[in-house]
Figure 1 (cartoon, rainbow, N blue to C red):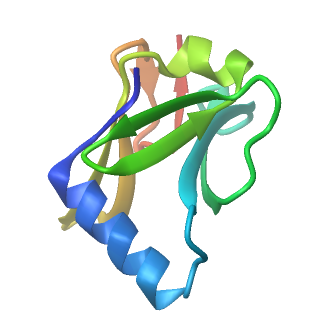
Figure 2 (tube, rainbow, N blue to C red):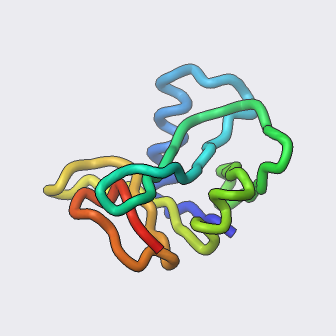
Length: 108
């Protein structure tokens, strides 16, 4: 399962409203090759499910992830931070054995 922190939930809802996203919009997360640690996170809004999606709902936020990415993201919490190192969504991934300094890429 992939979960969402209260902070991430609120910021996602705010962004969906600001961007006038249609009813049924959800968060799509994924993993792709790249970044300084080997794998990079992807995060976007979507409103069309794809064949093979794993779909979760936490705190009223729907999250979709493709099967391949799910293997890397199982147990991950999507959070939002506004700290000194910048603000934005972050992945708290228990499967990552190493992350880069900016937190945008990881390896397992």
